[in-house]
Length: 589
Ligand code: MV4
Image (cartoon, rainbow, N blue to C red; front, side, top):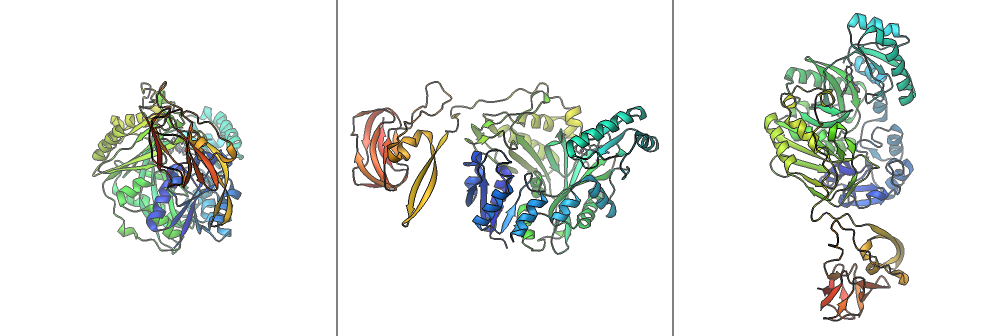
């Protein structure tokens, strides 16, 4: 079994993997950019290493920095999460070359599923059909017209090496064919560097149904269950659920078996998802996602299986801990993505900023997978998923009611979120009836009256206090180390006033006009040490920032400053006394 796993990711998925590691008795190693120094995944991991940088390219996408931390930390496994390097074969191979386990599929399987052409061919070889269409690349509009006349209009022109919906053109009649082919090819060239396109029948009202699969290194492969992810806008999923509504069990079985065939055909190992379009009782292979997906908890909630723990065991070479017949699906689960985006008017504008208040829902059947807590900041530089709410119910009706109840309990202040859009979907008769499709949110859902909701933050709505960097030298058992300390601005004067470079404490930023600039009046020491001097006595008037005593620690004298102006009520220490981190030395009224 693996003993130490580095999580090459951030936010809620890093938190999810760290939790699984802790439950399995595995040491977790977080990595972080400068902006994530105090983030939740860093707080929860056993160890954390700085990558430096702010943007993803400077941090979570810097291979050399990640490999360096893999070596320095002594990790024997790397979990990539989703996004970032999760489907990057160069990264997977570099990890493996270090003798470290990449917790994901073999690079060859990622490559086969990496473009539409080779993935369609792999599915075809396995006997699993995509939407009826040609496998040859289009060379003229005549071929488009011939296909439409034979199979019926409308048809879809797709970029062979594209993805995510870019490069797709819907053609409704023969006279639109030439222009559509031109623009599809040029968009494909611009977007993906290759212009090749092919044609298939266009399904006007399909649902996106995907099948979770799992395979081990011993030749076992199973399907775990489907998820309906039709509630999307611009290919961003908003709500996912399992089972798919109005989905006959024969179709589920057939889709599961098709997904397993695709899995085996590409030599897949670990957790994966096979995507299908589903319309009129038929399903068609779309693509395979060779990673753990955002919506995996939906499957966990209906099966009781821990997919991340299973990923780790399978990566370590263990056989799957369950067979096909052991998998039992029970009840209904719904996941709602809570993104820092303002859905007003259907625009979904990014809304990064500080999370001033975050109270998550509780109660029966409610799970919160979050990446942030109150006081954290959602940065514009990364994905703006704040957290996921996953609710389980005995059936779909109960699950919908519970999800609405839980969303009503959720309190987020400081930034706009997708919650109003999520509620509009959950309450809409089309969604309740399971009559929505992949085009429904954009074509039918009316978000024009959704209010602009950026709750500013309540009484405790103070911005997170900025921290400043201080480099200090420490000695541990006689050995000297240079240490970087990140000190809250208001404590700079007190904490590490090395070399007499005392910085006047700055009042904390505050939401209120004059309120809350000062501290509590209970002046505490920031580190263990000895009081060498007491400079105030009871009854004396002091100003905020004034030194009240001097603490010797780490071979330096540190001025401990009053955190508010007032009268000294109590002096709790005398010169020569030892104190511990956080001990209150003076009380000011
Ligand atoms: C389609 C389709 C209808 N007919 N193909 C868009 C992204 C790409 N991965 C596949 N997509 C579609 N292909 C045919 N022949 C409709 C879509 C589609 C879609 C698919 C999955 C999830 C969301 C979607 C939203 C709009 C269109």
